[in-house]
Image 1 (tube, one colour):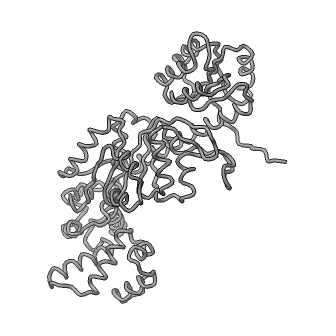
Image 2: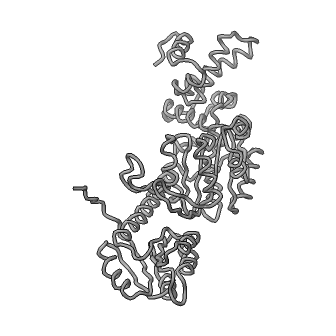
Image 3: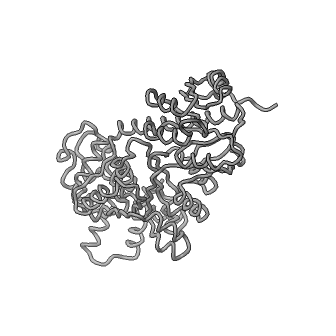
Length: 461
């Protein structure tokens, strides 16, 4: 005997509009039995009047009604209450009208005669999407309280240009490609584009394409049906659906496999997605912002990235400068980070000694602002409440400064010095993660540990 799904659907406030009297009476009884509240309307004009007076989580409308069609009702709904989901009912043998309604922003459609279990399953999906969206907004608010609102810090000439480009592109619907080295703050720029756009009060969904297993990327982006593959024990809403009405940020898009690049291109061209395991398509209204630290043109030349996708996402390009190219922004950046780790601290002049500032400015910052954040956090932990000195900076950071100073003072370095400098640069780029640094350098982890031990004379943990 199959297991009973005990998960309860969150109650929804519904509007049902259909000119069939029998269906009206049925929904008055059955929708409340499912746990929802419902307003029943006999036609489209009555439905629009109800929408003007009340807020609904979802509406279910017949496509063919006297006075005003279901498509027209959905059009008015999206003007008055864009967050309300719409489901269309159609009694026609073809689904052309229903598909047209999806293009106007309907969540899904059902063909008459439909079963109550189909309506219940569809309402569960709407409730799940609503719950996920609410959780996302709650997490966003918590993060803002903890870290403060996302902020682009710096008044240097390169950053002034970045802010100017954001001001120009944010109010548009253009796809944006953000380029820059790892750790330069590409997600902050994407958030700034969203926050200054007409979609600012809608979801901002960020996903790192390089962090997802290849076999799960399609499911994460587009969702899947229950039973679509082994382990798909329930229906899953994809991130494109979660972001509908808002912005989706595809970080490290250069890491997408070629097969997924083709599917993403189709979504960008058609604004339609298809869940894994389903044949029907859904229309999504999202603005796409992408980012990568890789050279996409070189990847196209080596057949690592689709040329048509590169041109499609590169409607408007924003190039983020490396921290070493805007070193004058380091003091305000350090102050911003210090406020994060010491919310009630004194002004920056009393928190960093001159030797610490000199050391910070002399660093080449291969890890950019992300590396600076790690260095500042490390220093605040080590020095307790006192001002940060050069000795409070991380050991590998100090070793790099000494190495640079020694090389500058004595001229040419040995092969061993250059080798150790390459090792420390790799550790910096990978935030101290030795397995990643070893892989980047093309040496074994054991060899990396041996070289570090030889340098310090101590056993490296």
